[in-house]
Length: 477
Image (cartoon, rainbow, N blue to C red):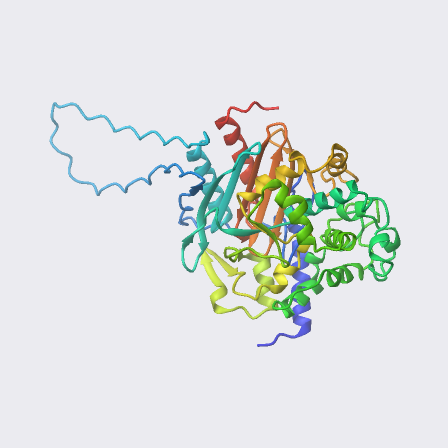
């Protein structure tokens, strides 16, 4: 049944008000990081959702790569029914058989405790599937997978699955721009009109003065289009049709400033989309080609792709949406029967049941990377410790501007007392996070095939970091 435009707009307005009120998470050291990519989407923790049912099945034991994972402790066998007590004897009562010692994981990580922490978080958050990568230095990461990649088939989630890592893309785009700065092709404080001409910003009043620093530090005053009801409706009407970067920019700049230009932080994915347009304008190459040649190949990252210009050899795993995001799909689209799923007492809507063209293009250089989880620690750490950028460029990237929790394309903060560089990512069906702890030279990366999990992924990282530190004997700072 076709819904009226008024109904769609009312739904979208209600959704957006709720998202803005409850979904701005604290992902990067106090940085409100709304979701950067496709519509409809949400980036950070939303308003609390219904708790899992008491009899929900715990998340299955994980797989691990590149080496076999330690077998988790067996589930307790139900006790037999009571029977009459035997007549007492004088023979001694046998001692209980001690539980077997857990197998030692080749990485030295306490995999049994990691399994337990992941299972607890997955059950609390209602997450069908989760992948994790843990790395020290530039060594190959140790990877884990738990749960289901597809509730319809009950296929297990593994580290070989491709996932969408959303706004983690912003740090990669920023590093690409900084490499162009080092070559003298662009300047952070030169107006973008020098590279894109005078008409790229439409009627936006501050357009002539916007610089790359404004764009990548979220001080250009742009609306966050991923929260906008009009963008929700636009995407719902053309899910099978890609959206071009200049369309995204025209949509975002048509609002006028929504924050004080230059002096107020207001997270907006459109800024990094414009940065991608600058990359293409000054190099004459596609943004995905420049990111591959300047970032991915030098770091040895082989299973990461910037959609829609390039895609992985197989589709991303199924991703699920619930709560407000599921309501957006419900109200603005015809939900295919195969898109409906139930898990742990929650009703979900699956992302891959819809056409993907709009969803794959709406993030681009602001949130379009698709990857295997094992690539993410090498990629993210490499931006800061892989020799790609000069000390001056790294200082630009990691120096806070008006927001003390955000530099250029990266969150600045700490976790459990350890300094961290981080970013989250949220697109329909996926919630991801990566954090590099430079004093420990440790990187954690994880992705769940659910948007939004509640509690959010920062709670999982708070549980995991102490386990990793203790397993590897790393001293606290």
